[in-house]
Image (cartoon, rainbow over all chains, first blue to last red; front, side, top):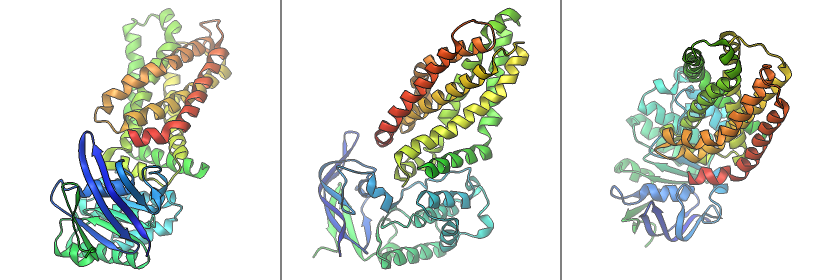
Amino acid sequence: MSAVVEFEDVIAVTGSFPVLTGVDVSVNEGEIVLVRGENGAGKTSFLRACAGLLRVSAGSARVLGFDMRVDRRTPRRYIGFLGHENNLYRDLWAKEHVEFRAAAGRGSKSDAEAALAKVGFPSSLWSVPISALSAGQRRKIAIASVIVARPRLWLLDEPHAALDAESRTTLNSVLREAASSGATVVFASHEGALSEELSSRVITLQGGRVAGDSGVS
Amino acid sequence: MLAEVLLLARKDLQIEWRAKVALGQVAPLTLLIVVIFAFALDANAPLLELGAGGLYWVAILYGGTLLTQRSFELETEDGNIDGFRMSPMKVHSLFLGKALALFVQIGLLEIVLGPVILLFYDVQVANWALLVTAGVAGTMAFSVCGVLWGVMAAGLRVRATLLPLLLVPVLAPVLLAGSRAFETALGVRADAGWSWTSLMFVIAAVHTVVGLGTFGFLLEES
């Protein structure tokens, strides 16, 4: 299996504050990796660095074979990123939003419908403005927007947030299916059993560096 | 690339159509500015006729700046700036798509405002071709400048106040050229209206080239 994320002694800074202080980690294709750690441990920063949204100041960072210190934009075509916020256009209808994301990634309208159905978003709400929906429903639209991009690398920050029990189980199924088809999933979560049950590997961050890795003996 | 440009522009216009910010808030506000100018000048007909072109562009400058702000608000609310950066579309398409959507909105604003100026300020159009061409040139210049400077302010907390501060000085030449061209088109100044119009096309072209070259960098660094 080839490495999808290869970080060696990666340092990243936000403002003047070092958020990653020497991360060494390698994630292989098809893995489902849970990133955990206390608040401020660097989970979100790690995911953002993988997505190229956070500049790597020092060290070696390769994602999907691209050197993130040279080109942060090209690999994003193959990455699906879901942060704390949902990245939704609130005045669009749910279906319109996912259709837009699908079209941006050369997908079709039927891809959008399939993705909404997959996350259990009811068709009766497809033509409702996003601003009128609940937090959980918005999260589902955000997840559907990642699905339609057909990413090779999924980077998810607290993906279960705001979802009900049934939807959390559905999300886990979606992520397992993605991994079984060759995609790689890296997600940060504070959900205990639910996340551990999903993941094939757990990386623990502390103070901006890897403090534990179940994949390393 | 054209498909991506149209896709992004369509999305922006669809959102505006739903939210009705341009038509429901910005257009009435610019109309109000035009009316207030008339009151401020004490409904002095010769003065209003003389200043109609300039006052029109001042109102458009104000309304257009609000529309530019709104255009980038869409890309920053709910963490959307990350979605915008992560977009698989080419950066050139992002720049041109935003500019096209802004062009349509500012153009509509101008179309709404035009008859009001003619009516309230009692001016006659002496050269329709010049008026329309100058309007198109000014709108193009405004749109590309707006997107170029809008993305610079997009990632900042103070963008609401910073964008006008950045944009208005940059658009001052467009305001000047548009005013002169309109004054010629309205027959109140025997001046080189076409030259001023050409200047606006040059400003639009220069900013388009700069925008295409720098938009990706500015998007990452904003």
